[in-house]
Length: 167
Image (cartoon, rainbow, N blue to C red; front, side):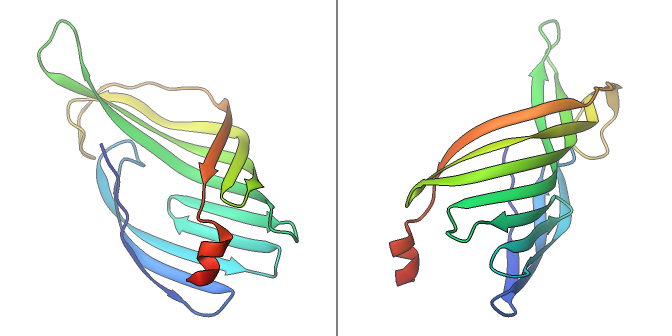
């Protein structure tokens, strides 16, 4: 499975940018195409708002040295899995979608290496088995999951500052 979200955007000034596009994804638990609107606004050198609606919105705070970022965010996450039951030849599809409310800390380890710690709560939207992966599929088994805590650790690479200054 894959997702793609092409956007066309404009940078109005040093503090505001926006974009419009389409998403082909499984964010709602089933394969779907929907419109996207991205809007980013920096209020000053430390505070900002970053959004890709309807998938994600986050409030950003950065330290003055730009080596620590804190995010308070809400995101829509989903996926879709094909499952072959052992006693049947046909496939069924597990459709999963949830809303996550998260607090994230990102820290620079080196010029191009960062880590993050993210924690919060996830709320289930659906966790169902269906006969096709499409948005209008017939649900075979419907589940209700309780809210759950989320915790993740990440290490990721970014372009070095020297390279960004040359661009």
